[in-house]
Image (cartoon, rainbow, N blue to C red; front, side, top):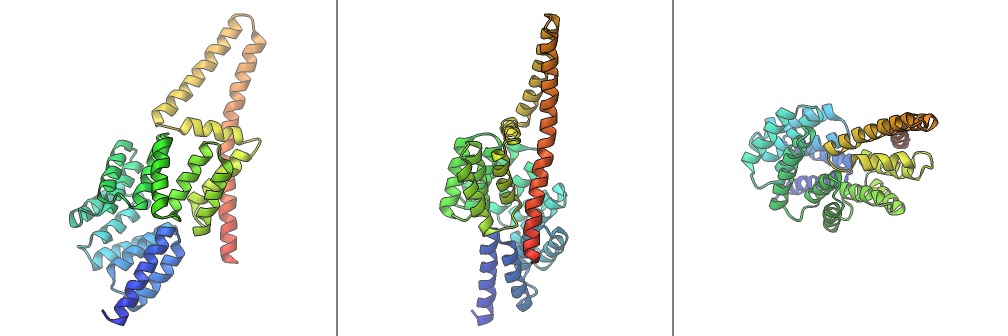
Length: 312
């Protein structure tokens, strides 16, 4: 292998390592150097597309992904990168087609199953998502990214035991894996282990200070500690734990319970009690409306601070 080929290989591996750690800018810088030497390297364009997606430069990412497929149309990784890029552009049907095409070129690559799992998630098909994740685990049982995706899927289903098992397994493979750190942090926060969750947020941010998921975890920790909005965080966490059907049932059940209690109090001469129940329900509704907007403002503030620091 020539010196130039070794350099290209080293930059590609460096970029891949940066992207696994959540360092999108580090990956972009390495790939720019690589492409300066070998501009027709299709897989480098594909990896650059993924890095640009992570950096939220989605239009540039789509250009790079299409270029990758044009250069190497029979390489699975190029189609995978295009599929991932199409997802952030909201083109789920086209993304699915790219992942399935990638799977025909390389049926043993777990990335293709992860891509199909992501399409299923955005399409609102949790069971199909889990099937693809389980297939990915069969293909690569020790891969941190596969394990962290499974941890996230079970976290959303409210299964703390499986969430912890997969998150810890991912961190055993890669102690600095950003998304594994974040999902483990959210699990710790849900269990009331605030300081441990904060540590995981800072650990993730030390890998990528611009990571929206890590910043969201940090803001969630701050919100839980807030005397005014901590209760909202707990209510929101309880409602969102499990399936959407469970959330709908709880909300409808709460409203029905409030109406029955209010009418019962009024019919039995407890008019003041009935009014208290009505106003309490109204206050709870307002409280749950204010909470998300506050959380969004806090997250935007953290993102703005990161942007200012980067500009400086």
